[in-house]
Image (cartoon, rainbow, N blue to C red; front, side):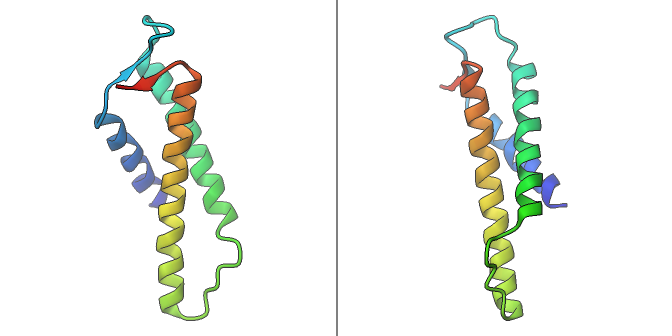
Length: 94
């Protein structure tokens, strides 16, 4: 379920801007984006497996806050990975 939410966030972030590739104007945006989405999903799954270091989960309230913080961290990291992946392929947001 978390991965599905992450993928929705990543997909929506792609809709917010226009991608251009000045280095290679004939590059295939959809193929590169699909590849970078897979990389972001892979990183998110690894982040979920690793979990927070020293969770500090001593009460149910702490656990809820920790889970929400972890989900936010995972999503943020996945979006960063996706942007870096696109940049490596020559894309930038316009």
